[in-house]
Amino acid sequence: MNAPNRIGPDLSLIRDEVRAMSAYHVPSADGMVKLDAMENPFPLPPALARQLGERLAAVALNRYPPADPAAFKRRLAQAVSLPAGMALMLGNGSDELIHLVIQGCAKPGASVLSPWPSFVMYDMSARFDGCGFVGVPLTADFALDRAAMLAAITEHRPAVIFIAWPNNPTGNLFDRATVEAIIDAAPGLVVLDEAYLPFAQDTWLPQLAARPNLLVLRTLSKLGLAGIRLGYLCGDPAWIGEFDKLRPPYNVNVLTLATADLLLDHLDVLDAQAAQLRAERARVLAALRGLTGVTAFDTAANFILLRVSDPDRVFAHLKQQGILIKNVSRMHPLLAGCLRSTVGAPSENDAFVAALTAALTSS
Ligand code: PMP
View (cartoon, rainbow, N blue to C red):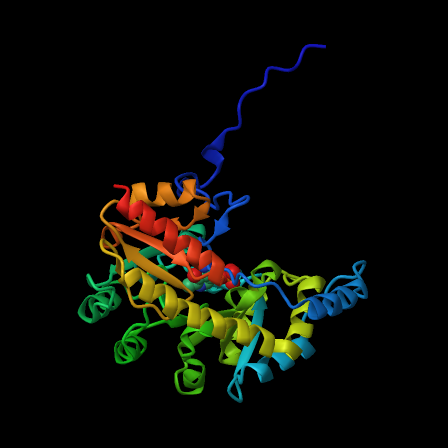
């Protein structure tokens, strides 16, 4: 039988802004020292991993998750000291929550604003929902440009402003008073994204009750649970109630819920790992600052932004030595020459510093 004449898919059906996008790129890291994605390098202690295995074996995989895991959310709220009267909702990673906030506010002509460079998903998620995206350049030393931020807010009246606290990929915390001025000036919501809380130990959560247009976004990813995909969004129950309508039912699966539920009883383990990573961060930063030809910027996160004269060559050299970091040098003009490296386990950090040293001396 002759195959019918097949005409290729007519992609004009797809929205122009989607066709113009590139997919979020995740490079392969097989067999490499993985310092590109801000993961916690430490596994769970074996006894806890065994306990988790038993807990997961008892989960009813044949059942849907609870549509609203209220008991788990209450435990989480207590564990993170959610202020009285505030609410939280869960997301399949904080990525999903970024998307839901924008989706909820994406009226025709709405825009999303963020200091820039920052986390790429703010821009991508805005475009997913047909919103304009306004990236307001940081200053050359990666601080908020207060005048430019306030002017852009006046000009664009953004529905949502995202501020990463600390910022990715620069790693720094912004000036708190400037963020307060932005919250005061914002005509819409301001989301403080605290993905790196375990390393910054600095939060806006207690401000929620006093600032009705503030939301605080968090994730368990950087604490050591990136694989289970669990984020949470905190704010006034009225806001959370609206965004919760957009949440796909069952967006957080039963294995994730069971894992997080057990880990809430063992946060001390993850906190100790974060403390070790903070100590490693200081050690790596000191080592990098001892190298000629590297500028290593201050960081409150579990990664370090560094500038070298030839980032492509240094990145390629590290990769060839089996060490994967992120080349952000073409992300934005302010990041010219920059590479971003996650703080890993001590042996990984030693390998990184040694390979970087070799790369700098081999030019
Ligand atoms: N916010 C910021 C600032 C991030 O850097 C990241 C991850 N790189 C996320 C949110 C997303 O985290 P997740 O979806 O794993 O919760």
